[in-house]
Image: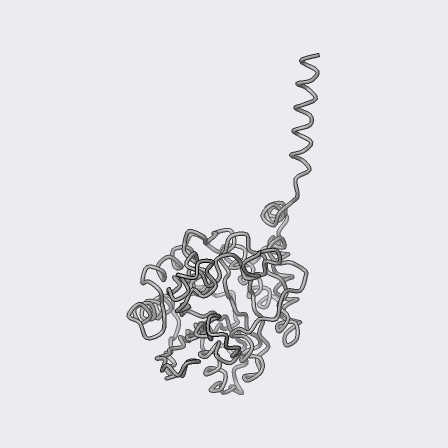
Length: 336
């Protein structure tokens, strides 16, 4: 009887383990062996290093030494990987009248190519951790490992991978937007949608289409390295560029990362892609996480808190997003 009870207990444990809910990582790993991946292998370790390097300068808040040092480093990395780099400087005005010394970094891979895709992210840090659960931290600058550095890191790694590639004909404009995160803090009580994405607004207003070179579409990478992240179809992306959403989500599936790219709709996010769509007229989507059950924020537990540090960057998330973007770019090559 003792042995029978032990046997039943073992069977029960095994049954319970088999019935545990499947999470996004399990799904991604399940399809890993059934992928139809194209293009080079995205290195999560390399992207993680680029993310960590940006954070090593400190919080890249506007008008700070850390901001300028990081800007110089980003420029040099894109130059190192064969891009033509332009620094688009502008004096912008913050929600409170502060003069912001802004620099959009525009790095062009194969600038001569007629067909082009824009990859973009913001590189500045939030000056205030105004969503931190501890009110004492609300005026503390954010290191912004995920909310800023992760998107830039993915772009730099892609630039490294394609620098000597002769099989991809599409050109890429890597655009690092500045002054994205100077939006009015929560503790002011101000609702000022146009106080966000200042660098992208400036870029969009000054964008001049080239008759000989066409930016077919854009992909914005925002907070693409967080733990337990999943990416839903953002509503402004669906409004302005539904075909591009379908293209990217299909690429995620064929690359083996459908567990990260969910076939449901998320929120409508005021982000850099909005002025690109509405002012520059370039269909652009936002790859941005959605945490529907997080009590602190639908952007995840570290958003605009002092916990947005490298300790909460997940290499698997960087890999899923980076490989999906690579897949998208190389499928365009096959279709052209």
